[in-house]
Amino acid sequence: MQEAGIQMAGIQTAGVQTARKSEFGNASLIFTATLIWGTAFVAQSLGANHLAAFSFTAVRNLIGFLFLIPVTLLFRARGISARPERENRPDNVFIPGRRGKRALVTKRELISGSILGVIVFVASNVQQLGIAGTTTAKAGFFTAMYVIFVPVLGIFLGKRVRKMIWGCVLLSVLGLYLLSIKGGHLSLNVSDGLELVSGLCFAVHIMYVGHRSSYCDGAVFAMIQFAVSSALSFVFALVLEHPRIEDIGLAIFPLLYAGVLSSGVAFTLQIIGQRGMNPTLASILMCFESVISAVAGWFFLHQALSAIEIFGCAVLFTAILLATLFGE
Image (cartoon, rainbow, N blue to C red; front, side, top):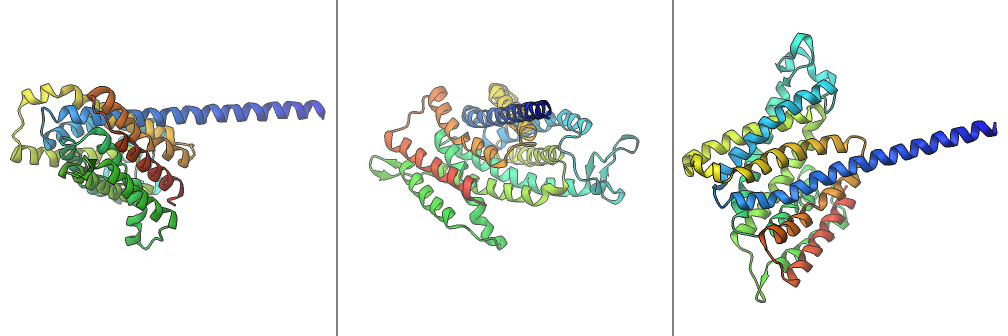
């Protein structure tokens, strides 16, 4: 019995170690995705020097869409990010699978993904319009306000907002004030306002995904949203901006970084990393996107922050972190 007990204890210890390694591996994937998203603000800022907002978003989302096609097929082959079986009924199939396999795209995914694409179109272009006139630190932190906007917007869906969230709202207002002081005066420009609106739009995006994701394949969902957002952005770009091929060539590296790494690779890492991972830990790791955007702006673009602005970033990060921990 003693030997059996020792053997069982050894098996349990090995199981715990395996679980810890798995958790660490998943956390590493999530943090890598967060690192990519944070530094993507630099790519967007550099891209804004050559391409106007709609043109940049159009090409970026097209690249993300093309990248996700093989990713979606790979996920489908390995059973990752699969939709519930009930969604594969014949009357819900839009693009059938080969030889009686699960549908490639369902009608509900097409409709919901298209609506999501419109939301992404607005959020991404508002963010890109704003980033041309502000720092990556402000863009990152103002966009990250979606963490606070989500529970507050829940009021309109009949959800109660915890007192802690209202405290986070007050903290975030203080942080925004400190980030916007120039020479002792409040200096919140139009670009800063656009980044805040972008954060609000991404909050709507997150709420819609949460409402619809239970019956959709995550990879298919993302692929459709990028396709719709890219198509709409191309229309606006052709009408309002008249982009040139040579401008796209000048912005090719920021576009590839934002399209392949931010839209494609980071999204893929998030899907894989969040499987079987504590959602709270994943959310906390993703909160560091705003901090990384500030550091990346300082390192790559030499966008220095004053002591008051750094304190404002710290206050905002605290509000975002608390909202992540106590938002539900």
